Image (cartoon, rainbow, N blue to C red; front, top):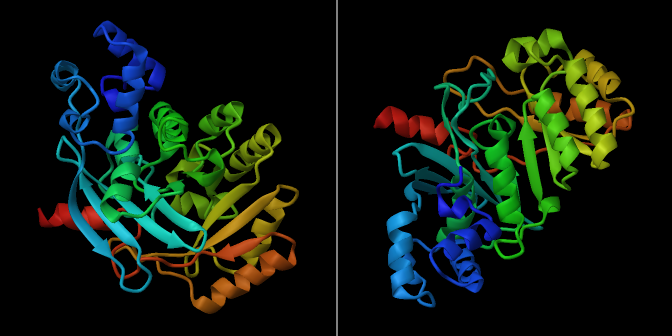
Length: 343
């Protein structure tokens, strides 16, 4: 993980520069350049040329390349398909909200979780992203778009908690005062429900928002759309969420993709209300994005509104996620899959 210089913390970088016979302030200069999105050491004009040459030889900088860029005419959402140094591609989405710009990043190339409604998982897991590859998505989205990024969502391709160590290092880097300095309170991490990792994350007491992809109120339904439920059933998952809240005092957001005739009935709403009773939570109802290879269909608008009303009447805050980038393949994994098929 630490082979790439941009995956290093400032103190680790100081160690590298010390070995090269450099004073510690050089590490701060280098760190600043890297976290501004420098693509080569030649840009780092306040570093001695001999140092730049030595760093280029030992620690090459690998910046991602834009393969495709699509901008929504409807809402200004920008979707990037990045080619990484090994030729693999990942997606990043820049979304514009009234409170500022948010970037949704990928944490893996592909995904092994197998959720029935998601395009990201169709080809399985190729590999996990390194910390710098997650950081680069934020940095170069900001550089390319010219728009400042203030919020980060780890909800793109991959399961963040399945790449736990690298994701934790990425969070440390992006939160660093000497780097992008993005507050943990402006970061949301999504998981399909890896219970041991949720407990591990709780111990860190980070002030980020945990988003749990629940998508069903019962094992009967969840088993059919999310294979992870066979390892960590609904009750186990919700008990972990309660432990997480107790440790962090942070309200949990539950993601709930509305699937026609599967999880959008009045009975499903009542089951969900019973499951979430007493847990400080917010339910984010998501209009399902159509995936060509999946037979699942999105709920009707009326069904979504009815479901939301039932939750709110029971005292559970529920919002319907605004659909962004519908005209640019903005749902997770679609652009990468389309590009892979073409090439």
